[in-house]
Length: 159
Image (cartoon, rainbow, N blue to C red; front, side, top):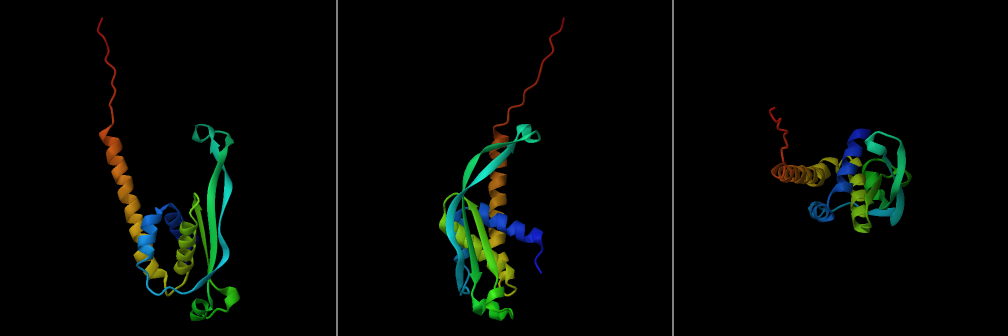
């Protein structure tokens, strides 16, 4: 059984991953089960809220573009799990921007990660490499920021 926290983590990882990385890792999966769109990829807007000073009163910062997609693994995958089609596994993909393909891949990966036969494979093949790449990118950015750090100090003048 997958916890809510685990699912939030992989959905976040899939949404934040660059499409090129996600495509490459997804392409390594063999013979995927068939799926259908419950909600084909579509673009929309979401209102973004901010806070003054990060902790103050909330205000509306503006709108951002989102793309969402919902897929359902078809009867062959549901049957493997002993479910009928109405109980088939649904996967959700919500990403920032306008990439239909990114939202679709995120939704398919989410559905596969909920399937007991696919969970470990998708975790090892897709999620873990994406997490490692994101950590490497963060470390590289931290090194770049550190290399440009300027230390200021104050000198006291004598009388």
